[in-house]
Amino acid sequence: MPSSLHMVAFVPIKVCVCLSILTVFLVPGKLNAQTPMADEEATTLRKKVKTLADVTKTITSNFTQYKHLDFLANDIESKGKLAFKAPDLVKWEYVKPFAYSILFKEQTLYINDDGNKSNLDVGGSKIFKQLNNLITASIRGDLFDDGQFDILYFKKDGINIVHFMPKDVQFAEFIKAFHITFNESGEVDEVKMVEPSGDYTQIIFSGRKTNQPLSDADFTQ
Amino acid sequence: MRILLSSICAFFLIGCASYPKKNGFRPIGDIAIDNLNPYFSDTSKDYVYKAKIDAFDQSFGGLFIVKKLGNTNHRLVFTTEMGNTIFDFTFQEDNFKVNHILKAMDKKILTNILKKDFKALIKEHPPIHEVFSTQGDIVVETEILSKKHYFYLVDHRLTKIARVKSGKEAVVFQFSGDTRSYAKEIRILHKNIKLQIVLTALE
Image 1 (cartoon, chains in turn green, purple):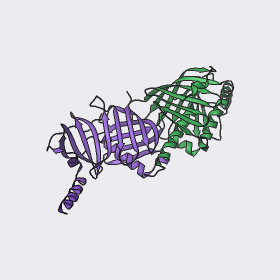
Image 2 (cartoon, rainbow over the protein chains, first blue to last red):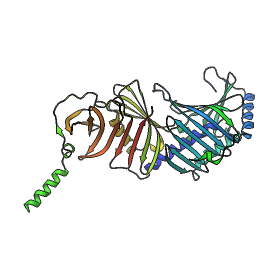
Image 3 (cartoon, rainbow over the protein chains, first blue to last red):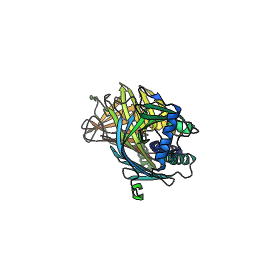
Image 4 (cartoon, rainbow over the protein chains, first blue to last red):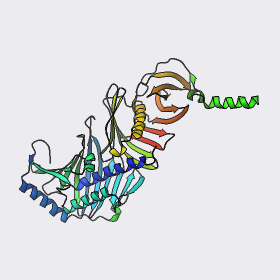
């Protein structure tokens, strides 16, 4: 068994996790009769998101995640909570049906898998630097980057949905598209990560609070 | 000199003895064995496990998902906790198909290990060569992918599978839990390489 085999398995899994984190901040639509936005509407949405991002220093939220695999009878449901503190602290914590958290902090991924802790220094990695930039750019509202994504804007019944298709080949291996649903205030209500196979992970947020005081203690492994 | 030669011969004979002989299994002839491995046999059930993998001094986890789609047709998927697919396999009859696997993990040596391990995990009715008893329990010698596998039944419930090579256990599958229809915890322990997988059923 090649001694490097463990790394080729370990590192891509961390990439997948990172990609998942950044979707929280991607700007966000529903199927069935969603219509493309006019350019002016898309511009208005981008401005709304940027304005909100400029004044958002912290976010806490609950989430319910549904993993959909076509061949399963039911989606796999899990629940947890999210914490974000500008400029780049993110903690994603699952509480049910398993205990698992991932913390992105100072160029390091900290994982706590039901008490088993591990971390990965990602400072030297180009792809993780890109991910970090994406996360912080989303806070500034500059995530609408035509250089990184093909972007399509839709609306339905007052709900805005934005589809982001990664242009980067490495990203596209994991994620075919992000579908982000925004509410009228420009906040993210829902994220759907669609894989190349068509299977997807849907994350629905609830109980969102912004600009509540968060300390470093809220971002421990 | 004769005693030395006899000792050497005895040493080799014992060393080369089969797994059943080494473990003192007693053949018990033909007995009916129904449903040798029921743990992934229900087509109505989604089998979802929290997985912990220790491989070569690295640990990582995810979700291990199995679905029986037909008589000899299983789909196995491993994802991160956040839903990203790491690998996706289909076992249908004697065929093994990689539907998807991360490029960095797409190494024949790795997929072969996973193929052999998961085939043993899901095979419900492997061909039976012989049946033994040991200390009141039953051990069934079978063959999966041309390798001998010994299924241990305690009170007619599968508790262990041992893949044996040269008379020794190479991989051990341990099943625990208080139901007969699925295993609440499964451990796959490799004896010759640093690889261990622990699966805990999500209720």
